[in-house]
Image 1 (tube, rainbow, N blue to C red):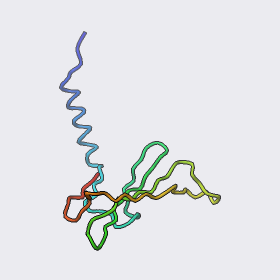
Image 2: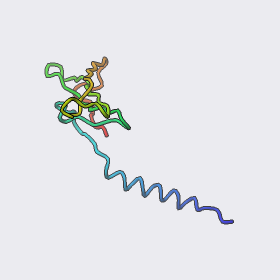
Image 3: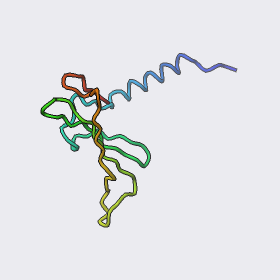
Image 4: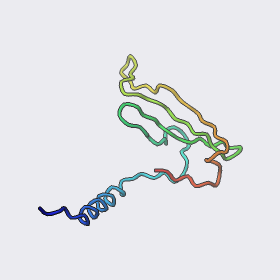
Length: 102
């Protein structure tokens, strides 16, 4: 019985990775507000994540909205269940640090 070709499997995986790489979204600067947030989540829980810079210090706070599938109001509008603000120290979002994320 013939054994599968290991090299062809590796080449196939590499080709698939290269194909999918073109669809990765990269933010190269912090978001200014929730309208520029990065969507995150899976299954029925979701987040909209962004960093708001403090004009005085140049550092930023990490913020996110939380939502869940099936959370509708009486007008059948999707609701955000909450907003969270994280202020980190030391702050990884300080001015001058790289901000690329995907």
